[in-house]
Length: 381
Image 1: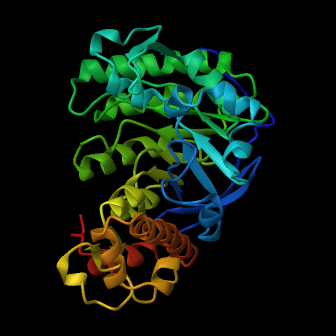
Image 2 (image 1 turned 180 degrees about the horizontal axis):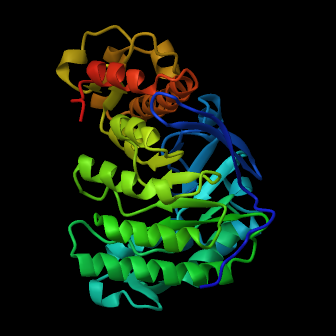
Image 3 (image 1 turned 180 degrees about the vertical axis):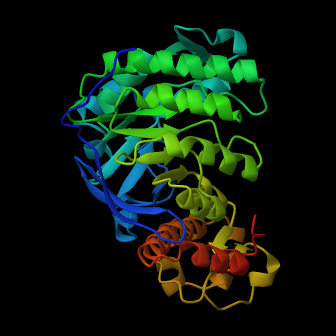
């Protein structure tokens, strides 16, 4: 196994405070396009846009890093076009940090099991049915073209449920693919490559995977293969098995997680970065996140409610519009209604993480969790 000592990494983690009550950590991640505080939620801009939001609006609500999707941008418009435009930051006019995933999660959903090989994954495009092969080398090449601050290694995400043998084979392949990713990575001094830990829901495999992946001494690490259908208590148990083996001086990223309970519980277990399509996806369905639980704004109960989505929320939607008006927009299929719900939800999760950071600083994250869960309506699992 080749070990990269990774001197002069473009992404650096700074520990600021450890919560005496919970052990959660407050930190700052430095990137070539600015810094952001952690724990942090990253809005997802799959196709070089966070659905319904402008980059300026995201920045106004406090977003400092977003995620974009390698597979989708490779398929359309093509990474060569984005490279020629000056990279993803210039292409979409986003001045802050960008993380790109490897494209593997999307490709595996399009591929048949028989088409997953050691070389890579054969699949057909969801756009036109054309045939493609995504390999570790191709994933890195596309991400190098995109010019993101954080590049994710190509990995095999084992489904849930799956057998121990299947999860073991996927985790082993993930390690071998990481070696190939490191060799293929052309911009190690301007783009930080993060390795991904796999192992399904099996503690022995998680521990084996994390030991193998962190041996490469990369700028940061992600935990993949969770939030894929397993029960929440199983996810938390896998974090408890895995995080102790992750370096304390590198960012820790839990992939695909964005519900308020998992954000808080993940932070308690030492996670620094999260991402999920949840806020904009449920926003487009007319559902809003509030401290008192989910509010279905399109429901008839909101028809004559001349109050904001959430009292005491200072987001653009709540400062200017009522539930009754937003419900009207949703029922009339006006896109502004979908934007307002998405705007509120993104603001809600970014504000939640700001509150989590403050609770860590104040050494009271467990108290904050209890208060939040009680008001939101979560059972204290």
